[in-house]
Amino acid sequence: MSTTRLMILGLVSYLQPVHGYDIRKELASWNVESWANVQPGSIYHALRKMTGEGLLEEVSTERVNNRPARTVYRLTASGTAEYQALLRKYWWEYQEPQGPFLAAFAFLPHLPRAEAVGALRARARLLEGWNAAYRDNVEEWTEYKPPHVGWQFELTMLRCEAEARWCHDIAARIEAGEGVHVNEQPEGPTAEEWRKAIRAEHGEPADEDE
Image (spheres, helix red, strand yellow):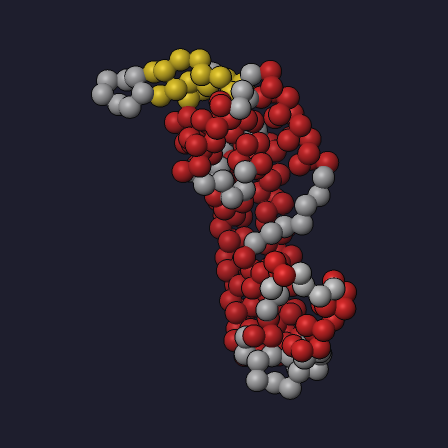
């Protein structure tokens, strides 16, 4: 939700007074679903919520012909302060990237060795394909946009390149026999030993934890 807040408050700051339709269309053109996890359906809800919190205020309501009425927003003093705080939070703090792939990779041993190798190499090819698309279209996507938009694409391409190389490397190590996979003799602690280690570190569960 904090990322959604930052994106919406930032756009209102740029474009105010502005209605939700323009915010939604602009964010869609940025493809924020893929890199900021901002869902289009959440934008109007967030606008109403932040208005209720006093971060935004409704300037007017516009109606064109028979189209639905559109509310025009601008930042309040509290909204400006919240935007500046979020902006600096994400500039000066580092947060580890999150995603379903990291959760799935935590259970790598549950995949057969051959499938893990194939999946990693397929992921690398997908990342390389995305990178090729970025390179081929970056001029079109950044046309009429400020220079920092192109720099953001550069960061995305570097991340794709780095992860693709990592996928190839881990696939090669798995293929060479490193690690342990389903139906293979485990080299690390058994499940029972693991459970005992958890209890030793964190104590026995309370009744509500059972």
